[in-house]
Length: 279
Image (cartoon, rainbow, N blue to C red):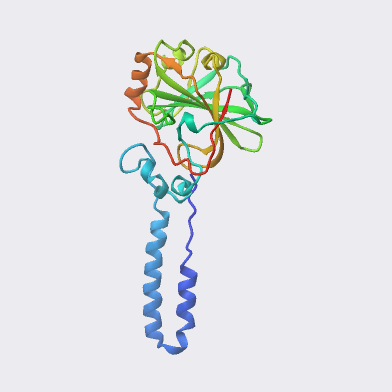
């Protein structure tokens, strides 16, 4: 993230001091200006100091994201933050919402360990979804463990986020909950090259991934307005979370957890938002 570096108080401090010159000796004024410059230099130095890198640990974890960098302020000040707990009893029927149109095809990807998650980046822009009449193109997908969203107050083993972007830069994310079960063959090729440490370059996949095969058979979903679940926690993200979990084997889940024991953000307040269910 780019840091905004400025000296907001220096000009103001000098202006005040110079305005008082007629009532003070030059020696006193020089002393005050020198003190002011020293104080402002310290402030400027603290502004230039790089922000701490965010993480899922104690000192730079989710509870502290909002103070690590001014650009992360939405993490603590936002009113529509993600993830959330989806209480089925509070879900409203979406009579005016259409099902999401998903147009996926087998695609070549590269895999990266970005320090926070395992992320897959598509080689083409052929995978799209249509949400509320707008087309979004798949930008990347990644994994969290345990799940970030909750169903009725419970986390699942993992969660997959398929992140899409439209022509104006707006985001829509498909969330797939993952539970322990049979081996996920559609992701087997990804698990075969999971980087155990942070990568400088992406690892190219030897075979395409069939994203359509990842989707649950029942595509009943929950829609709500939320945010990114990682800094800068930017809002105005359209979330679509499928009700039916997909499965991964115990071995697949444990393989991911050996790399990332815990890379989830806790649930955030729902506030005045509605969760709409679409069958």
